[in-house]
Image 1 (cartoon, one colour):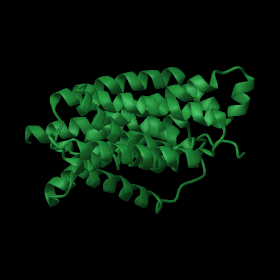
Image 2 (tube, helix red, strand yellow):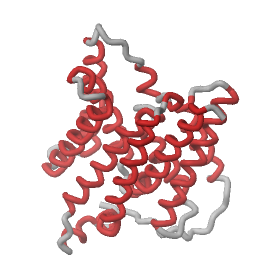
Image 3 (cartoon, helix red, strand yellow):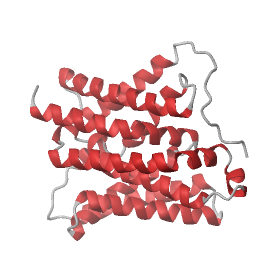
Amino acid sequence: MDDFMIRALLGGCGIALVAGPLGSFVVWRRMAYFGDTLSHSALLGIALGYLLGIGMTVGVIAVCVAIAVLLVVLQEQRQLASDTLLGIVSHSTLSLGLVAIAFMETMRIDLLAYLFGDILSVTTTDIGWIYGGGAVALGVLAFIWRRLLAITVDEDLARVEGMPVIAIRLTFMLLIAAVIAIAMKIVGILLITSLLIVPAATARRFSSSPELMAVMASVIGVTAVVAGLFGSLFWDLPSGPSIVTSAALMFALSLMVPVFPLSRAPRPRAR
């Protein structure tokens, strides 16, 4: 097997392992649109990273973290509905990123690679970022797991019990921002949210506990990465979309499998 394929498998599997537990909370908390907003803002981070000379990854992380903090602050003010606010920020940051890139006439940027990913160009340095950042993200998630789970089930009750709801929410959003920034090269800006959501949604039907769902989501994500990469190699297809397509096919197949209603995954209380 060629070296570039080995690096692609290592990088993709590393992202899938981290995306599984985080994606489970994204599904439970119904935050899919939030993930889209952060991924769209990554394009602005790419432009700023090149313009300021701080590097693409650092630029993306900085912008995603800033957007996450801004969203938490604006959501607490409750002047706009969350979906309206996310729609404004999502499309505004994506458009600003495209405009900024258009002004960079002296630099050539492969926009398609950023939008849809270029996993076959993953380097050893990228793998270091993925596994180092992923280990930190999973460690922080494990530390806040119980409190985040309690907030997911009933945020009002968690406030009454004295839990730092805003701090926990912000920490979780920052984790998603960091993972999106690191994973952007794998499946691209427009597809990263799918890698967070689809494996978790597939695992939900077969899980009897939140912890089992998180593990199953990681396993399904890794399977989708391996199947997508070998499928793209065999049929000469784009790698990032092939990975997401593999995950989507696994979700579609899961719907055909009858399951007993054993899932105790948290469901936020209807408001």
